[in-house]
Each structure stands twice: as C-alpha cells, then as structure tokens.
Amino acid sequence: MLETSVSTPLITVAEARERVLGSLSPLPSETVAVADALDRVLAAEVRAAGNVPPFPCSAMDGYAVLAGPAGRTLMIVGESRAGTPAGVAVSDGQAIRISTGAAIPEGATAVIPQENVETLPDNSIRTAADTTAGDHVRGAGEDMRDQATILSAGTPLNPFALAAAVSAGVAEVTVARRPRAAVLCTGDELRAPGQPLGPGQIHNSNGPMLSGMAAHAGAVVRPMQQLADDRAATEHGIAAALAECDVVLISGGVSVGPHDHVKPALSALGVEEVFWSVSLQPGKPTWFGTASGGRLVFGLPGNPVSSAVTFSLFVAPAFAALQGAPAPRPPQRTAVLATEVRRNPRREQAVRVRLHETDGATLAHPTGPQGSHILTSLLAADALAMIPAGDGRLEAGAMVQLNALAA
Ligand code: AMP
Ligand code: MG
Image (cartoon, rainbow, N blue to C red; front, side, top):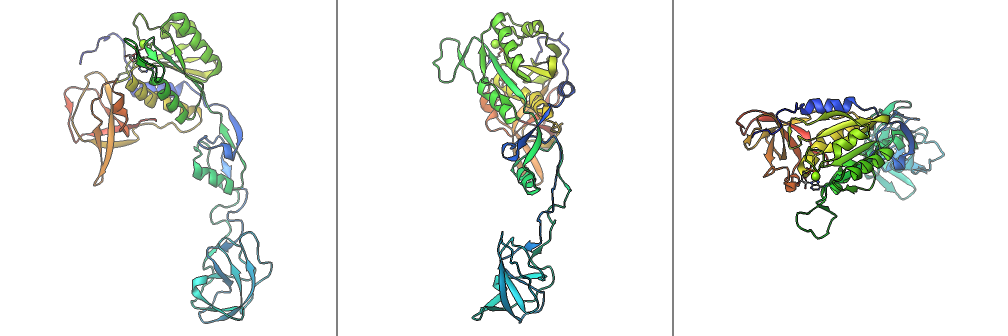
C-alpha cells in the first residue's frame, strides 16, 4: 500500500506510548470510604490494623474439646456462637458446642465436627473420631498478621481488594483522584443516536464509544460534546474542555484537510505538540500534546476503529498512569496467528483478533474485514495482534504480540 504523506516522519507505536507516559505525572491522591473505592487505584499501602482472624476460631460446626481419642463421652458445658463467645472454659471430659467462625473457648485445643459425634440424651456427646491439637482451628493472624502490608500502592481496587481492606480493619483508603475527561467529537456529518440521516450524514458512534472507554479506564467523563467543523467552534469547545479536565479526547478533524480545525485550534490555545502521526494502521493520524497544569490532549482519528485502537494503545495507558497504576507495557501476551495477514510496508498493524486456546497455544483469528470503518470488527475481538511493518505476508503460524483492546 502506498503512503500518501511520505514526508511526515512517523514515530513507532512503542515510541508514541513512551512519549505519552513520559509526559504525565500521577494525579494527587484523596481519601475515600471503602464503599466508594471500587476500581480506584491505591495511592498508599493498606496495612493490617490487627490479626485476621482476630482470635482463634472454629473452621467447622461442632464441639470445642481437648484433643483426644475416639470413644470419649464429654459433657456439654456451654456454647460459643459466631459473635458470642462461650464465656466459660472447657476442661477434660467436657465439650462446648461451637459454630463456624466462633471463638475457641479457653482450654480447648481442637474442634470435633458435628458429624463425628453422637449426641446422647443427657446433654453429652460421644466422640466418634480421634482429634489432634489444632484440628479445625483457625489460628489468629492466619490470613493477615498485625501490621503486615496487605495491599501496596498502585493496586487497582477490585472487589477482592476492597474485602481485604475491610478485613484488615480499614474504613477509608487513599486513592488517586480520578482523571476528569472530556470527549469532543468534531464533524458536520455527525448526528445524535437515532436521528434520521440526511444526505452524507452518519451517526456519531465515537461519542459513546470514547466516553465508555474513558469511563472504563477510570475517568470521570463529562457529557460528550459535538463540535462543528468550524475553526472558532473548535477552539471554543477545546478551551472549555481544557478549563475543566485533565484529559481532552478529540475525535476527528485532526488531519490536514480544509475542514480539519483541531491542530490550528490547539496551537492557538498553547497546547504543545508531543507527536503527530504514528507508524500504525489503523490510527496513523493521531496527535498528542500537553497543556499547562499537566493536562493531556489526544487528537484521535475519526474513523471508529482507528479511534478504538489508538485509545487502547495510547490513552488507556495514560489513564492508568495518571491514577498511579503500573501502565501495562507490551507485549502483555503472545499468540500464534491463525490465518495469514498482508503486511503494511511502512506501518505496524493492529489487527482485531479473537483468541482461542488450543493445546498449550493461543491462536489469534482476525475478526473479518479490518478496514478502519468496520466497527463490527471490534465486536468479537479479544485483543489487538500487532503485525510488524514489512513486505509480503505474515504467514499463519507466526508468533504475534498482543495488546489489550481497552473496552
Ligand atoms: P476525520 O478524522 O474527521 O477526517 O474523520 C474520518 C472518518 O471518520 C470520516 O469518515 C468521518 O465521517 C468518520 N467519523 C468522524 N467522527 C466520527 C464519529 N464521531 N463517529 C463516527 N464516525 C466518525
Ligand atoms: Mg472530520
């Protein structure tokens, strides 16, 4: 395929990503209740405020006893329930009824499960199995030791991490502030969802797509705004977004046609270009720059697949890094190409692939036609297979690097 603008020096995907990551610093942190911390990124470690479990407790419903052989008759002298310890000690010849999670009474060294005892009519039991010290007893601190680091800074707080933080005795966590993001869609041809289309018009699919991708990447996304292909409207829209946001995503209008006003508008607003044009297909016409106060501006290509691909490769890592999460650096995985792919002589290709696990290998199947307007190529895709620039074809069976497809 011939490149039209051979004069533009193209930077590699890897270089572009490094420049993005090198242009930003993590956002300041804030303290939030654990209940509000789902999917936030920890900015300070969480340490256990005590042992977990806090006290030795039972792993079974049964009887707390002194360990010993089968065939003993033991008098039941009390009960230890979850939340209500027995309040009495157990001694030889005695047992205390106990529930899972209830405190082991003083004197007891083991728990004999309910199914291993025979209950006798006179409030006693006969043991039907041997017990050794420690049987079915969960030791204090088996899960977390007092003061141990349970979660380190940079950890994204999934539901398990939230549970661990609460278990560690924590009510609030220190997390990075969520990035505020704006999505601006340029294009006179764009119509809102469901609006009837006039001649030459299309629906604005990048609006919901980029807003959704930004939200999934942890951003607080301001309502999408559509901008006319007009210099003043473009500059005004970008200025308003810059006043409120840490990250401004602009879709379309970034090329060099007579109706592309994004670059001159950015220049007039003092946004400094870091790169323009990447050796990537789809996604070559990608612009990235910085504004005062550490704000980031991405000019993403209007073609929907190009927008999704460049978001995945450059914007998603930026959102992660802004929140203090370790930015995923490729290759994250490799796979075996299932069918041959024609190479682009000058640009690395990001091919949407479906992944299949077969005996020990991951197979990457391209998801049909790969044009930058084929939005449906994203629907069944699990990842982007990166095909290095080169001549001819990359044959089926070749190993390819995978990049995450942010969604
Ligand atoms: P541009 O980058 O503005 O030259 O747009 C490139 C192609 O993407 C054109 O075919 C546009 O109609 C299309 N396009 C631009 N913006 C959007 C959008 N928000 N949703 C869907 N397609 C778009
Ligand atoms: Mg346009």
